Image 1 (cartoon, rainbow, N blue to C red):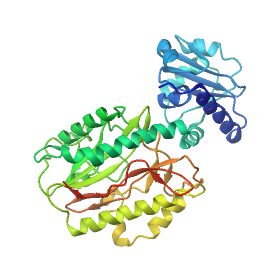
Image 2 (cartoon, helix red, strand yellow):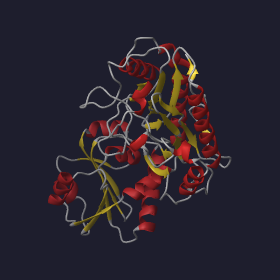
Image 3 (cartoon, rainbow, N blue to C red):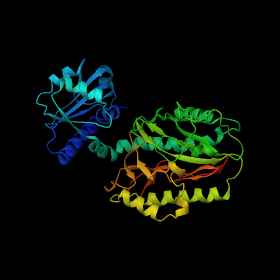
Image 4 (cartoon, helix red, strand yellow):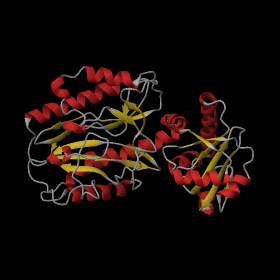
Amino acid sequence: MQIPKKELKERITRFRDQMNGSVPDWDTAIIIGKINLYYFTGTKQDGLLIVRRDDSAVYWVYRSYERACSESLFPDIRPMNSFREAAAATPGISETAYLETSVVPYAMIKRLQKYFPFTRIKSLDSQISYLRSVKSPLELGLMEQSGQIHRHVYEDLVPDLLKEGMSETDLAGAIYSVLLREGHQGTTHFSMFEAEIPVGQVAFGESSIYPTNFNGPGGNYGMSPAVPFLGNRKRLLKRGDLVFIDVGCGVEGYHTDKTITYMFGEAAPDEAIVLQRKCEEIEICIARKLKPGAIPSQIYESIIGSLSPDFLKNFMGFEEQQVHFLGHAIGLTVDENPVIAKGFDGPLQEGMVFAIEPKKGIPHFGMVGIENTFVVTAEGGRSITGNKPGLCVV
């Protein structure tokens, strides 16, 4: 897929408008992160996108220039063998440059400063994050495709994959294979520093509440201390197990997020069913509030304030693993801003997309709950990943 030239132009124009409004004295922005390069140019080739206040924007490509020209309709793509060439063709840069400070490593900054004259660095992360949070019709269309795959695989195909005696790793591999067959792009991207979850969290029973370094409510033993994700080879599925699946899906770079729970072979205990249904009610309540003008922090406070102290214990994580959000924006990465949490006080806009994930840990049982991906509309959040309730017996 080639992102249309008109769309790429609109993204650069919106970026300049955002920079002019938030930092009026800016002169030069240098974009290096692969995901942001894809957003602005339509390809992920190694290079630099230099955007100037004076209405020039050049994508300098180290490798591969040929592929960049084949994949991208960006109007000004130039080859380079070194930053020296890009610097020589970009005169008048002031002493301050704006970079993705959460992405670009220090060594890369020093390489840039060897050739470019800037001595001070300021961040443009919040400006790009804001732009990416509001999806265009093209982006929403891709997320709709991802959501359709997600729903079909989770709700229609996964039950037939569950076999007594299979390991968590077996199930993770089977789900991944089916997702690929149905159109999944093959990987999920995170903005979280060094977040490595190629498939997601697949867990049986208490595995789903085991501590993890991932900033989310679910848990997972993982393959080993070196690979603390994907699933565990030794944890085998048996009758009466909770099955917890939180795996991302994506199409042409754009993701959806979905969590579903099953019971294998027999019904869940009454307590688990009650708590699961409560999580589903919370998801519906949050979704109704996803309207333009709503404030994420207020949504969070209203929901948390409505829950009893007993329910809040082990809500959104087990014991010390509780997280302090109810959902997160999603798009080119799974974990985008804004977040349904304290501190996010900007109003929602139509076209934003959120993964809403109320979950609760149960001692000696596992993590119940739900997650679906919703588009912000005037009528409230519209799910694009289905709405099947959890703890269905398989």
